[in-house]
Length: 130
Image (cartoon, rainbow, N blue to C red; front, side, top):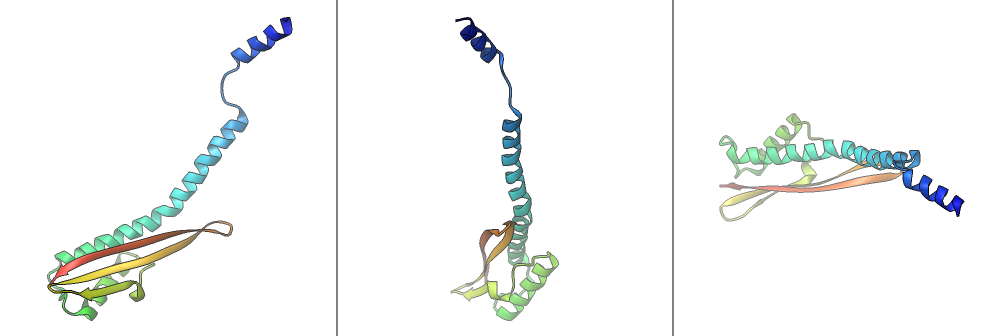
């Protein structure tokens, strides 16, 4: 009976986190930090694509009726903003009744750890009035 009380007393006074638990918490935190560090440039580039598309709306110098001019201007602006994952193949310009729809759809695949890749798929569009 005395050993039972002694064990219960020791067990009741133990508090805190073990070293193994602390390593586990830091490991999980480290994985999420690694994912965030790898994803930030991809999503920042997506933000730049959206901002560039929106700038086409406010630019009065562009003739939205001319698809080659529109495409050339968009590609130049994307290059200035250091967007590397968008090319001519990912840009589609469609004309409807009184508007031109510029759509940029692209996918970014980047290595995560070992042979695991993370894939981000983006689809942005803007409507320009003619």
